[in-house]
Amino acid sequence: MIRYLIRRCYCFFLLSFLVIGCGKPDALWTFQQITEQNYQEIRYFYDQKSNSLSGEPDRFPMYPGGSVGFLAELEAKIQYTSSDERDKVQGQVIVKYVVNREGKVRKVSILQSLSPGLDRAVVKGLGNLKYRWFPAVINGDAVEVTFIQTFDFSLR
View 1 (tube, rainbow, N blue to C red):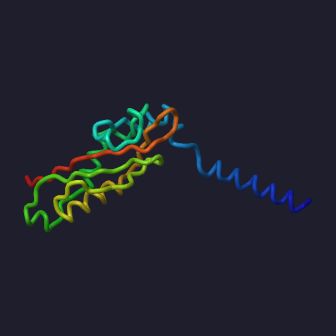
View 2 (cartoon, rainbow, N blue to C red; view 1 turned 60 degrees about the vertical axis):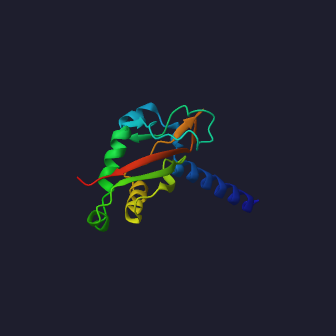
């Protein structure tokens, strides 16, 4: 009997810890929390062919400052490598990536390469974003969304 009570108490504390420690799911954020952190929807890079969603999400992924904030952060993080600058490499890198249910960028793949150094810089920049995304939502549930984005590199 005592073992049974100890086991039940242990399970209760474990479940309590998981509920408190994990917090609430991202899809359940309140409108006030979203506006306080200046999260704005980004639809521009949405790849409708790669998404297995029926149509579009109810709410697209959001990033603090929207596409302007997202691109400004990437511009600060993605720099020319010294060898590419010396060789005067210019052009486009096209990248496909997924914003998952937790708001993290995953599954980054290069669709059009420019140089190994610039490809690595783009992948690293997407992987080291300062903020997490607020995930896309369909019927109150967070879903993954695929984006395809072009990065232009030019020497001025």
